[in-house]
Amino acid sequence: MPKKESFIINRLKSIAYAVNGACILIRTEASLQVQIVIGFIVTFAGYYYAISPTEWLIQIGVIGIVIALEGLNTAIEKLADFVHPHQHKEIGVIKDIAAGAVFLFAIIAIIMGLIIYIPKVFKIHFGLG
Ligand SMILES: Nc1ncnc2c1ncn2[C@@H]1O[C@H](COP(=O)(O)OP(=O)(O)OP(=O)(O)O)[C@@H](O)[C@H]1O
Image (cartoon, rainbow, N blue to C red):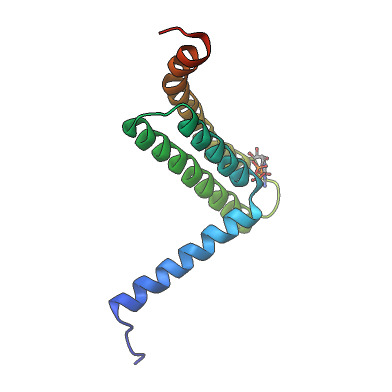
């Protein structure tokens, strides 16, 4: 009977697998790379417009959710291609739905960004508010 590995060894292995997955995503997925660049741009904007600690928490949370959703979308696309490598109407619908979920949250993220930044832009650049 194979020796059961300790709880800690198993957890460390899980972290190593997850880090490997994150590296694959960052290296190979253009859409995720775009999201990361946008994440850096809004982080710069956060410093520039001196957003509050609560706004930082919201902004970092939203960036994290967008990147995580993009990663899950990629996993669904790869799974769909592996299970059914040829064109199929249902595979198309499955991929569209996965992409649609990311898109819906991206719209929410943009609205949240506008709510945070529009008053600051008007105050700093137009002296209003
Ligand atoms: N096997 C397929 N059968 C039917 N339609 C497909 C299939 N593969 C892709 N499609 C259609 O093409 C769209 C784009 O699919 P694709 O896998 O290229 O994703 P993508 O959004 O371009 O992702 P990425 O650029 O990250 O690879 C899908 O949303 C779907 O409508």
